[in-house]
Length: 317
Ligand SMILES: Nc1ncnc2c1ncn2[C@@H]1O[C@H](COP(=O)(O)OP(=O)(O)O)[C@@H](O)[C@H]1O
Ligand SMILES: N[C@@H](CCOP(=O)(O)O)C(=O)O
Image 1 (cartoon, rainbow, N blue to C red):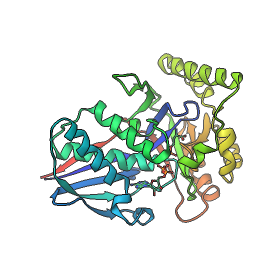
Image 2 (cartoon, rainbow, N blue to C red; image 1 turned 30 degrees about the vertical axis):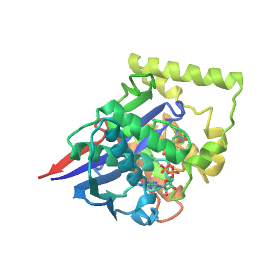
Image 3 (cartoon, protein in one colour; image 1 turned 45 degrees about the vertical axis):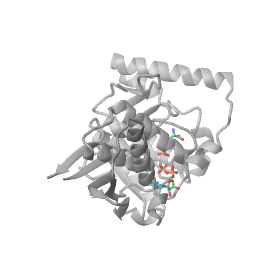
Image 4 (cartoon, rainbow, N blue to C red; image 1 turned 45 degrees about the horizontal axis):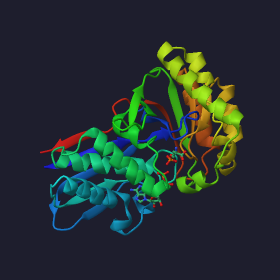
């Protein structure tokens, strides 16, 4: 019986929660915006086939693909519980561009681990699986951060808790907000975009960061949209990272001219996002970004809502 997992794109940080806030994305036009992993059968050795628009950007050696590490990590986790599993025949449909700021590696990791877990009849609970996802994401970006894997797996707007018994919690959000995203077509390495950030911040920046996140969380629970929107500002990463993103200031200026409630970098970029209350403004911003922020044929844009479902499993009997 083949098992397929679809894992949606995600926006890490959401400007105001560096490494601790992230949301899953779903295009309003029904387009697919996430990787898919199918496990067809068990096999003598790990076998990987690739499909999808961005498959040819992946390492050619299957063992360099993060989904292979997912299989090895999953097998090791079960071995620690005294359970042995055979190798599998897996397909990765790579629909998200690498180094895009849309949680591309997270999407592959989450889809692979969720598919493996379903294929072997759910031996790992969600928390254990999520911690394994974070560990694998850390292998790629240089340090563990759950702000892509958690929303990608669980859906919604996720706030990292990282306590002993809980990785993250779902925050309420405004279902009528539109999240326009635009990927420029350039590639920004997450590890490199982390390296350019300061190792320490001033007292003022630290206080601003804490205040914004606390007030934002309050505003979500209070249902206060203007207050929540006014807190979506990036004091930690954007001042340093925006120099990597050609046309960022012009894109923000256009989004603001259309009444965007917020504008920022999705993850480590180069994808940008704008939040709007009206479908018309969201679409105007999308069309402008498509024409002006995209740099090549790999760029794309979508008007999205938050994907509250997260990873979806289908079984083909
Ligand atoms: N399935 C995969 N999906 C994405 N990246 C992968 C995958 N397998 C291996 N990689 C490698 O991991 C790195 C991902 O880079 P990163 O900047 O973290 O991407 P992203 O920000 O899109 O997650 C690249 O070097 C890429 O070749
Ligand atoms: N919090 C991380 C998020 C990286 O997201 P990605 O989609 O660019 O991998 C960071 O900002 O470094």
